[in-house]
Image 1 (cartoon, rainbow, N blue to C red):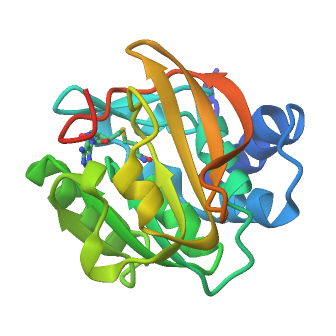
Image 2 (image 1 turned 180 degrees about the horizontal axis):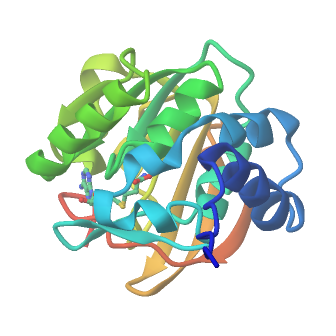
Length: 219
Ligand code: SAH
């Protein structure tokens, strides 16, 4: 008797499951974010040997001691930025390029900055393969933001800072939003900060765990 090997599910099916089980079942409620997460092919942003785990509920190694963030954290960051389309967004810590792709999928004009050149190069290739040619990838110290294109409506930081990075805050438009993990190495709070006339207003804060932000205003 011939034994049929089990057919592995299509990426699209895995993606729908990820959205239901990892995002909607928790506390991600913004339908635009859920739709964007359903469209971005995460399998194109992880190393080939890990493609079978692309939709795991986890961060995964991408080389150079860095990770692609857990889908839930990517969705939380996107939701916290409250984007409606057409905003100028800075993504600090490109890594694989996945977060940048989700932000672009939400209709933003995205600049993303990574300190490790080989990761930036890989992210460029990932973004091109997934069809996000319009995302601009830069190499440099993102703790200093990207002055050439400031101010931004929103800034997302995918690496943990010891305290609120002042330079990033100053590159926000009035009422702009900064989402950044702040705390010690290993355990932080994901802070959502609004640029207001009275100075930084912390909107909310949830526990999280990110790799450290290095550089001038990092660790
Ligand atoms: N958003 C990414 C997550 C990458 S992990 C993704 O979806 O894949 C965080 C990244 O921040 C790492 O690639 C790390 O190299 C980068 N990083 C750390 N400090 C940085 C800095 N000062 N400037 C730019 N990138 C930085």
